[in-house]
Amino acid sequence: MEKVKCAIIGSGNIGSDLMMKLLENEYLEVTALIGIDPESEGLKRAEKHGVKAISNGIDGLVEDPDIADIVYEATSAKAHLHNSKILKDLGKKAIDLTPAAVGPFLVPSVNLKEEEIPHLENVNMVTCGGQATIPIVKAVSDVLEVDYAEIVASISSRSAGPGTRQNIDEFTVTTANALREVGGAKESKAIITLNPADPPILMRNTIHLKTAGDAEGQKDEILKSLDAMVETVQSYVPGYRYKADPVVKGDIVTVSVEVEGNGDFLPNYAGNLDIITAAAVKTGEVIAKSMLEKERV
Amino acid sequence: MSRKITINDVTLRDGMHAIRHQYSKEQIAELARVVDDSGADIIEATHGDGLGGSSIQYGFSKESEETIIRTTVENVKNAKVAVLLLPGIGVIDHLERAHDWGASVARVATHCTEADVSEQHIGKAAELGMDTVGFLMMSHRTSPENLLEEAKKMESYGAGTVYAVDSAGALTMDGVKERVSLLKNNLDPKTEIGFHGHNNLSLAVANSIVAIEEGANRIDSSLAGMGAGAGNTATEQLVAVLNRMDIEHNLDLYKTMDAAENLMKPMMERPVQIDRLSLTLGYTGVYSSFLLFAERAGKEYGVDPRDILTRIAEMGAVGGQEDWIVGVAQELAANK
Image (cartoon, rainbow over all chains, first blue to last red; front, side, top):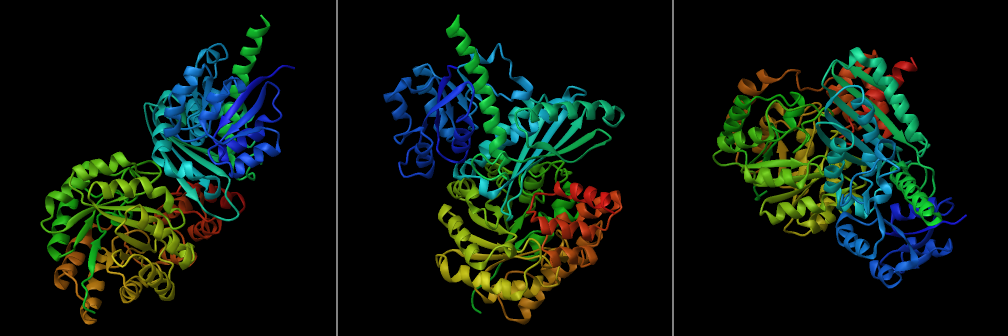
């Protein structure tokens, strides 16, 4: 079957995990991994898997624009602010995995509308913490208004590359914005902690929600909505599950989820990579399907 | 010893943990006045978990961040006012606002192995002209050699002072000696070294003295030890020992004693002391602010809070991961 060509900018943890996931994709063919250091492990790995390694950054894409129709950005928010303009001029669809938030936020289990997404030139995948927690906020806000959503993401130190570390403020700010815009909370806060424990911890997220009503009185509806949402997320992130029983007390709902990764690139503790790369793959598939259909017409 | 020790009072910041972040504006004003009058050089005032810490996760502050900082600034005559910032919880905007409200010392805190998340924040604090401090928490969890590597990173980002922080009150004197001496002997001679202790193993004063002997010249303390776990190094106890050892500082012993007895102790909700639970923190090496959370979860799920803390230590939780406690309590209750 014909596939849509895609390239990945960024050869770090996220770019590498994404590449591994795309190698066997039904709708997408990963043609290039774009980095800035020819000696980097990421680019060497790309070559080993038959993916073209481009080592002069976005210039390499400008020189060979037909190499891809969809471009995944897995660098940093700052880099994407620069690259997004170039991708727009080249007419490429950008799927942004940095917290730059140039395009609208996209969380597949909540707002992936198949009829709308293909028309957008740039979509933003929020953050790993956002992908893991926004579905929970949405599940509760579907039942009862959420006045305040607060999330705490714990990730293993080994899965947090230099890009994440140097941009930790962008992570918390972008995640908090998306908790409101996509999750439906009126106010929000996001916290991230890095944990160096060895063996590494699985990505873990706690979502504290202050609701506008008597959450305890609607406990059954809330739990039902949560269970359904967890199942939806599991359809594209199989290692997503409750870490503790949801606690519903008065107007407060607390949910803990953990994400076990597929081990496509880093070992399975790095579920924080999977949750955002799997969401990006899912989004790319929807765009690719619509592009393929258009060609056939 | 000829050099003078700088005392960084944490009554209004670490002390927040012990009072569930509920100091009122009036209490903040009175404590700031009294601590300033007793001669403390720096007074730190924020939520216990630093700027942006007010949350469901850690507990909401009674007063706003602005009220806490401005009230402290307005009530001190000599001391500089410090704020704590944990990257991942607080952001640069918080720091800029705190600076506008009059804070002049920025203490940027990370887990002892994660200094590279502090680059933006330390850089910004230095750019604002603040007295910039790198604060390496839970320093018992890493080797002295690795602590030095992390301290060098903070120094390279622009920190003029680097602290070895014993957040769990788990270091014994040799552990402090190794860490502080390595920092002192290998960082730039102009970089000041600090030590922040907790009294969970009854070693806060002793550890502070060892740190001074190894070259530290900034020491954290609080009135009557008001702080997380069994509390911090008690100012009045430290001052008494410093006087006996002829180590110079700016504090007045009687004033710190009176403030501890007359003002601080009556404000305490739960005695800040070494008891079986705070001792367990030091013994197992758990972040001191987990104390009240473990105590509550133990009561709610009918399990021994010491078992919760022991399990949390085995899991390697770091500061800020209070949300792990309920999961552990559920697990212990299910396995009973």
